[in-house]
Image 1 (cartoon, helix red, strand yellow):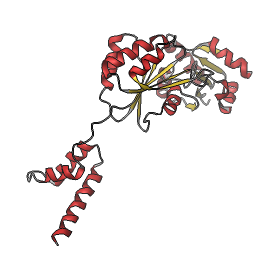
Image 2: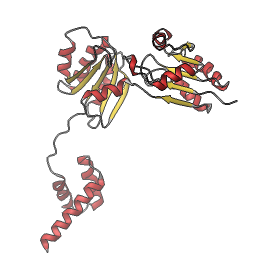
Image 3: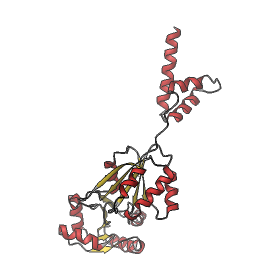
Image 4: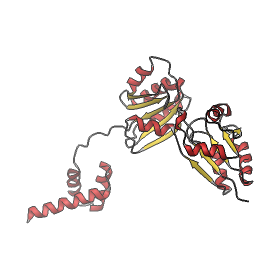
Length: 284
């Protein structure tokens, strides 16, 4: 008997029209849907006329319920896993179940769709060619400040967190304590819903903005990379300075300059060759 398939199905983060045609088909065809909150998911099912059986699957029953799902998959039944919103297993239940399926060599596939952190980053206006996602911020101030301290010198990536609306102001105060007033941030709220908001500005501006009224909706907090101090010398000037030290090989010089400017070693090496060619032309 062939094993059933576990489908990780992404569901809307707000606007119900964001569900995919494939997700609707899979949710209707599987034998069982495991949902983080069956009451919440029932609204989605009723809206789209989905009659598949639902079972609860949340943080505190994930291990036990996961074993039941594993057994169903062994019997050839197919199961869809959904969270309240967005993509399962991304700061939501599902990680342990996916691990068990991998251990048992049971097939797992994804039905991709919305993810709040990706939507927020795309809207943020912050540099997102590289980013890190650190999940939910801790509830305790000391733990939050420790996390923010680790971001203070991050100069290459935007860092994103999830936060509860009632803790946003406290989180911004902790962020101000660790990163100062002027760090650029973005705060996304109520994504894809009627009252969607994307704030972008400094930490102190965010405190002023969100301190005006009660904050509502799920929050994605994004911290821009720290601004690097402008270099005090050019790449060529650094190469010349180090070349004056006869103890250093070309390889070591290139390595040091590449590290100093955050450039690929191949680029710095080519610059050193161009410099030498120009000096030879002048000598000739």
